[in-house]
Picture (cartoon, rainbow, N blue to C red):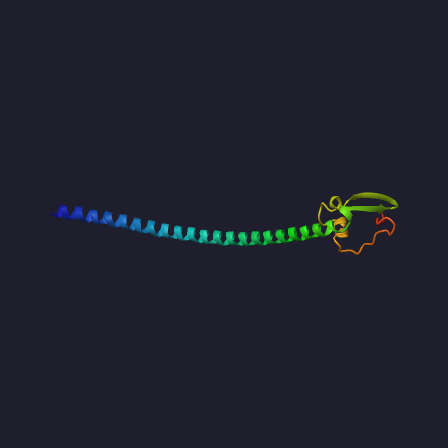
Length: 132
C-alpha cells in the first residue's frame, strides 16, 4: 500500500510540474499575444496616417490638375486659333500657345495665363520679349 501511495505522490508531483510548465507557457504566450496586438494597433495607426497623407496628396494633385486645366482653357481663348507671334530681340517667331505652355509653371504659362497684363504690338499683335 505504501508503494501505491508513493506512485500516486510521484504522479501528483509530475502533474504539478507539468501544470507549472503549462502555466508559465500560457503566461509567456499571453504576453507574446499582447505584444502582437500592440504591434497590430501600431501598424493600423501608421496605415491610417499614410492613407490620410495620400488622400491629402491626391486632393492637392486634383486641385493642381483642375487649376492647370483652367489655365489651359484660358490659354485657348487668349489668341486667335491658339497662335502667337513672339518678338524676341527684333526677330519674330510664330508658334502655338499650346506648344509654349505644354510644361506648367514656366515663364510662358504665366505669360499666357492672364497673370500678367500683356499688350501686343498694335501692328501685328506680336508680344515683345527682351532678351536681356
